[in-house]
Length: 61
Image (cartoon, rainbow, N blue to C red):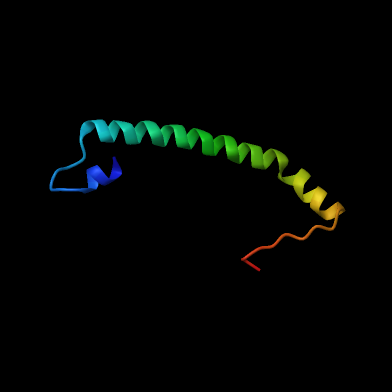
């Protein structure tokens, strides 16, 4: 649908706009759930890594 809405000289249809809003809402909800899960378990993971002397590979270092 994205390709269809980007093609041609016509603006996106109402249906494509509604679809985008719906999918964005669903995605936002899942991202909030993932953030909560990460917040809940991140300290446990960090402690486990520290206790077991596991080093993470990071591209930022």
